[in-house]
Structures are given as structure tokens and as C-alpha cells.
Image (cartoon, rainbow, N blue to C red; front, side):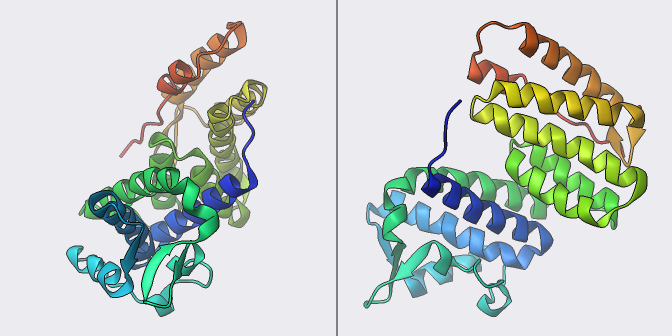
Length: 246
């Protein structure tokens, strides 16, 4: 099992929270966009800092972005991950500098996901079905930690069958997050829990195709339990996707 360093966990938490806030209000995704554009600038110019005014001007490229720093919740502005020097240049905080590559890869994946989401004119249904759809899209794009966090916030507010259903989806997300760090025992444990909880919601519940998901999940679980050795990349490529039913 691969261990994460404290700094890796801190970066994960920062970028994950920025992504989740972006799902609540598309204008707040400006913070994510700025992180993404900083990385683009570093890649194109080969410099590790950019003028603040130049960085903030990038948001004009996206019609639905109207960055208002006062609306960004405290702790989620770019000041969380960046610092501004005496010449009004923005750069990564020193403790994050050696993790620039990982930050840029993650921010690109997050921005591509969010921009695709908000470029879709169809939007989302109001209420729990629309929110579950967002959670499912997170899952299908491999954002398992973020899916867990997003659905857990919903789970705290729900009652009855909806609450049990959300817990089943959360367990699936947790399972594959464990897989990313080669915790195969944890993966198997949470997949079993997910299967058991979701079984009672077949074939379809709240717009989610549970029957097909569980069929694929069962096959995946059997393979994982019987396999003596584990090829992480192969296992990741075989993770079942969750289908939505309109």
C-alpha cells in the first residue's frame, strides 16, 4: 500500500475543495480556472511566476466566468496555494514548488471536467437527482475522493432510502480511492459493502442504473478476490462505470 505524504494530502484537499465548490456555483470555478491558467503559463513561458493582473485577466476568455474574489469562500481563493511577492507577481507557495507537476496535472483534469459540465446546455435536474448525477459524473471521471466528499455532504441531509442509497454509492467511491493507493484489502472491503447496500435498489433508483453497475461490480470483485498478484493500471482500466437513465 502506497502512503501519502502530509503535503500530498494537503494539496489533494485544496484542489478537491476548489473542485467541489465549482460544482455548487459555476462562477466560483474561477478559482480553479486561475490555478489551471497559472500552470499553462508556466508550461508555455518556462517561468515560475506571473503578474497578478495578467493572471486575473485570463478569466475573460470564459463567457460564464465572472470572478468575484469576495464571493469565493475564505480559504478557497488562490491565496491558499499561491503567494504574491513584492513585485505583484504570483507564484506557488514555497512548500508546494516541488509538487508543481502534480498540481498542474490535477488542476487540468479538474478544469476539463468542470468546463465540460458547464458547457453542456442541458444542465441538471433540480433536487436530489441532479446532485446524484454530478456525483456519478465525478465517479466516472475517476474523481473518487471528490465523489465521496460530494455525496457524503448530501448523505448528511437525506433520510430513509435515499440516505441508504447514497451510502452505497459512497462506499463504491471509497473502494476505488483505496485502489489508487494499492490498498487492495480496503478496496475489496468497501466493494462488498457497496454491493450489499445497492442490491436492494435494483434495477433503477433515482436515475441510476443499479442492475448493470452491480453486475459489473460483482465480476470486478470476484477477479480482485481471486487474483494472487495485482496490476494496478489494469485494475484501474477495468473499473465499472455508472450509467444514468433519463
